[in-house]
Image 1 (spheres, rainbow, N blue to C red):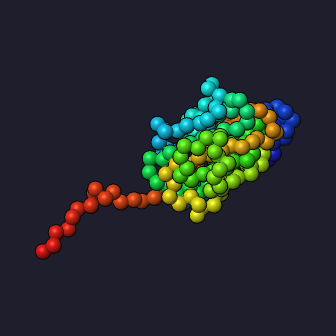
Image 2 (spheres, helix red, strand yellow):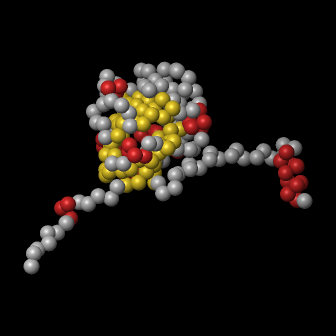
Length: 195
């Protein structure tokens, strides 16, 4: 009965209910956030607003702050290059952004280096995501064509347009999920002598 009285008091407006926290990210089973495997010295983003750079959307702590974001500069397109410190298998990607200015068409290229806006359409993407506004506000990663992302040393992300067609694309968070590939360092192997 006390619970009913508390609920009635809350409904009457005596105490406003706290805002619901954002839904936790639904990390795919068996996958990990690959942020710790990014080679930060090689990360690049073309057409970024210098005051709203890629680190705001990609770095672990910064990407959780809703006040920080990556923004495009001269038009809505962004070209992001992310190298990894070791080979990974990429399973899914999460893009979080505002409903109007968030990314819409996202093309992903596995192991394509030195791409620019002038040649990005010369190569077929490994996968293309057509993000809805639901993708941008829910913390639900989009599953990729897993067979196309088995031995990834680098990932190039081309944000082709945004939801509203405006001149500025904004991204609050980019998270990549997958696993590392166990590789053998040939230098660690010892020669077996014949007897």
